[in-house]
Length: 253
Image 1 (tube, helix red, strand yellow):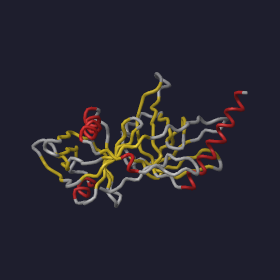
Image 2 (cartoon, one colour):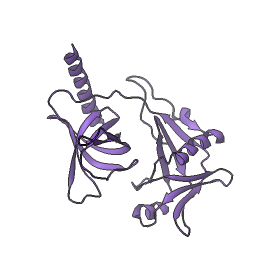
Image 3 (cartoon, one colour):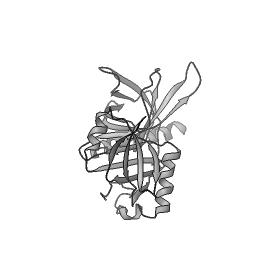
Image 4 (cartoon, one colour):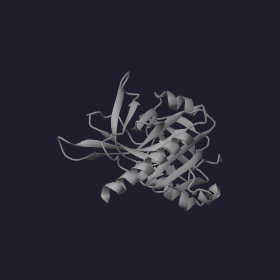
């Protein structure tokens, strides 16, 4: 199995945890995790080493037959490319737990009414307890925002206000009646402007969507994970978080 890469939970100067500590090999534990994806219809992201990404759901897990069954749309180019790949990894999130495992012998099969991906039942998975990061709300008159080009809106950018942000995620406010976002969706090339000197170029993964408030002031809260933040961007973001925390403390004195 390809060893997954996990964000470090170690503090400065501390060694990162051995990834073997997160390996799950007991069938009963593996099945307990996979059943949560099936019963909760929790999105899973399938990825290949060359960057192909497809968000799907786990329809069935059958250890007796040794098979997993994922939803698949054969009209999607990513599905066709993924079916030709020899290396595919599945990643999903169960609350604060990240679950990751390789898919072996992935095959696209066609039924009378639907198509699906079949894969071998995994012999091991990795689970990683994500740390709870401190979130801050923008302070002062500054209004941080994120600008993105949504794949479903050709030649148009969306400007979303930032509700709060941490070093692992960000919550965005959508005021328009646009049904564009779905859990598990990847949003590449997003520009986050926190203040006049702090701009981040990031990829976001949509984690949850919720309706907040009542009409006419109701809006959608789009909770996103910051994916593979570059070292320089991590440093700039941490500086902004520290500065904003200090401003909040001063305002409460």
